[in-house]
Length: 238
Image (cartoon, rainbow, N blue to C red; front, side, top):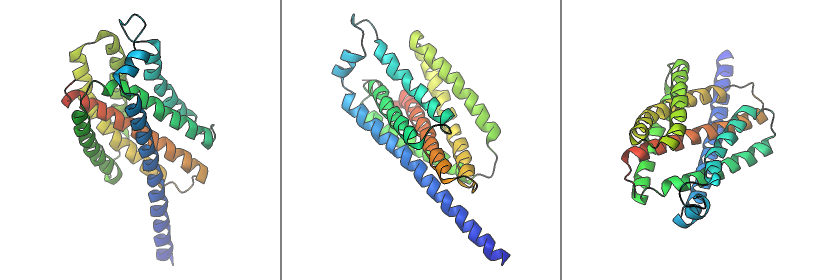
């Protein structure tokens, strides 16, 4: 009898885990599609010159910085306040975040050829997929490793903001190299964390839905940052 109960429990855990990750990847894919469509629609030199260059034509406009930094605020809001927000509001914020990320990426992708973007996307997908599988299958606790990677992320984030004003090509290269290691490492770490959430049978249906959305957001952010880091390394600017 106990053996039968253990098998039933294991089957149930596997089922809710599959369902959770299916939702996580669905949100991640939805964010990528929305961002891609927005970036493709608005990623033109005409749009950039009209909205992202100041009136004197000597620098970037205020709107450019709003579009660059607004997704950071929305992303933090979703991850930090998801328990207090309704699921409907979380969805609205999630879709708004995805659209703003698309606008932000449209200005970045103008600097690279379609071939470089395509090659980088497949390289990123391979690296991301490999680390995602590692994070789910490894028996090693990645908590300390994840903390180290997170500190690295904060460091390159601050350095990246500083380089917006400095414009150092050497610093940009260093940020990109470190970014590849940090974002691949964080992918494995977050996947392990999501696996633990997925197997938590005590979570309510609403909590699981919210956490799946937050998980999709986190993986999307990691994928985009890994993509941009690799693009800066192997992509030739137009």
